Image (cartoon, rainbow, N blue to C red):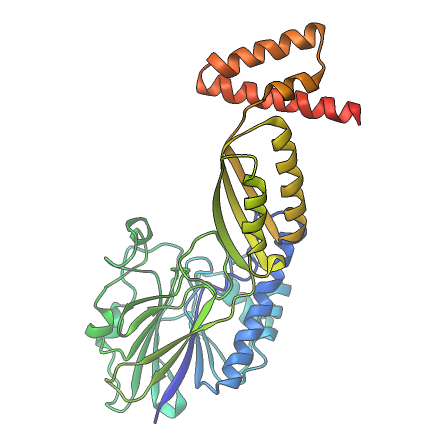
Length: 375
């Protein structure tokens, strides 16, 4: 008989989002719990046999007691088994989120805290989940090695649950700690190896998958925002894996070059094409050169989009202000101020790259201040 699993990971409940300040960051924190509720509803609707969470349930072990309670409450829609694995953010230390959960007595009876490397028998013995919990943040050992020596009956599905980097399958910088052998699914005779740590959905091999974080949390296009529905039809057969999108917020990156007077209309049109702006976080990288008057128009455009998007991060370090003679004349500067303008113009033309950028910025500030005084 087929067993269906919902594989998810890297919830990182309690994440602070230091680079997204104010209400926007607070909304991101709250949404992570809402997405967990959606996962529970999906598990109920699809009638899965168990939900496996492959590490980093919490962003750290210092999350508040209220956050621990809210997380347990978020699981309520699905009354089947949940298996929660400690990852590098919430490692199973002597004192951790896991020990606090047990001490608080808020863990529902259908939730298994897999904080020890011991097989978990589910589905009346037809499913053995082999967890490899991290008991410290970083480990140089392959904690999945014990899977190879654990014996189960021929009719039992064997599923590994781990959090780390599969050797030779991820970017080099991702493989420094918490290694997992690339052939572990084969050596341990696993029907499926459910992984966490890599925040994008990624199939490493036929039986080995990263679910990725269900709620995107960074500007990285590696396919986050999903969970995996895994159907196991018979021990030894290849699993059927279905990707289901559950993410609420969209983290996107755009690069745009200012080339002429029409560029701002083109930029506005590009932003108009964003799907669900109120749920979008956008990192916008601007390059090129523009007049001071055009820069003022750009700033107004960006202010408008900042109010429409959930969050807007603008990198304009590659955007140079090139004042026209009209810009300079509009300053109406005389005396000392005029001398300063002429000095800045000379630097803008003849100085080093650093001088030119500084001079352009100074001219822009002068221009905007003069416009303010004239208003």
